[in-house]
Image 1 (cartoon, rainbow, N blue to C red):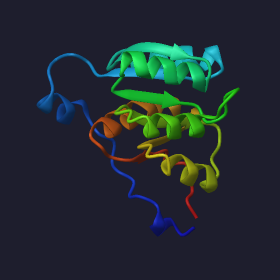
Image 2 (image 1 turned 120 degrees about the vertical axis):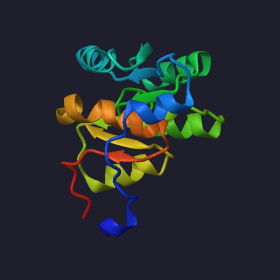
Image 3 (image 1 turned 135 degrees about the horizontal axis):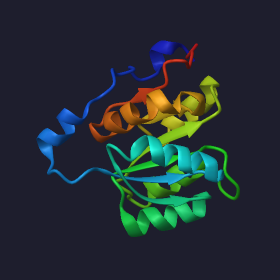
Image 4 (image 1 turned 180 degrees about the vertical axis):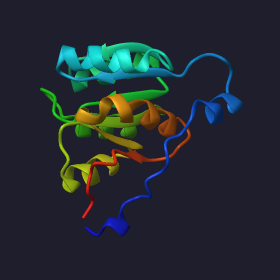
Length: 155
């Protein structure tokens, strides 16, 4: 797929645009990954800007928590036991979920990016770039913009 077929990469979004239209309550984030260390790392990265309202170790638990907690953003691993993150995102979308979805993953292949974005996800962050890309990806998603880690080559 030519790079021109992918959505435009946006510059990192900022808190200012979000806060202009919302109250002072921080946006809420739910994390889903089968590795506790990754959940802990992502929580540490996000906690200064966002309220992490929960974590899930698989897709089924993520669906349950999203349904109960209605986070603003769901950060979801692609490869999890049971149902994949991509299947999780499809199921949530079919159920009318309004949470914005960002994938964080080790998969840098364009086919994975295409599959993830086809679920309606607004972000695709590589785990090695988590420290630099996760916060801007969440802000972008909150504004309805797509964020893709810059190290991904879409050609």
